Length: 179
Image (cartoon, rainbow, N blue to C red; front, side, top):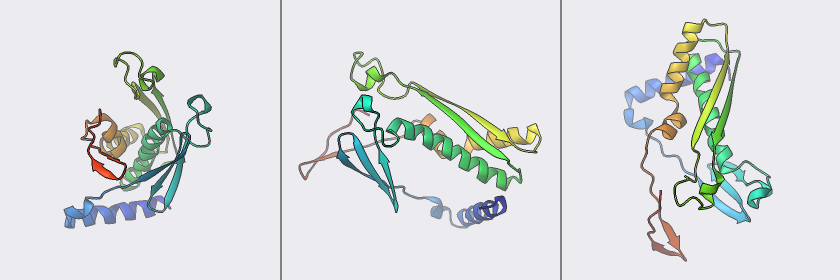
């Protein structure tokens, strides 16, 4: 899809949302199924994604791990936002590359450390490499817009409500999650 096509699509969406704000509210859904060992299959609409762990965690290293997917989600969401917002702002782009890093203390997910070591990432960082004929001031405006509007970045930095329940042996039994 060309930058003009992206601009047209984004413009149509913005216009539709202005005319009917409730049409902007969407629900994303995914279903995961355990396939044995630590291999999982995730279904999102018509798309299937396999998730695995490295051999050190008992996996076959046949697919990305959940931690890998967090980094991939952030980086790809930002790249999509760069493409969309650059199109809307008439900023030509030659290339976008984002390098991401997450620090994880594996003792946390092993239940070690008396609860003082979190099981999740302790921090995430990224470095965005943009190439464009646009001037630096214009590119800074683009970066600021992406940082302000990237949904996955927002989800990671803003506390959100997460709820869950477990259905045990086919009976609906609510189990409060530690999260």
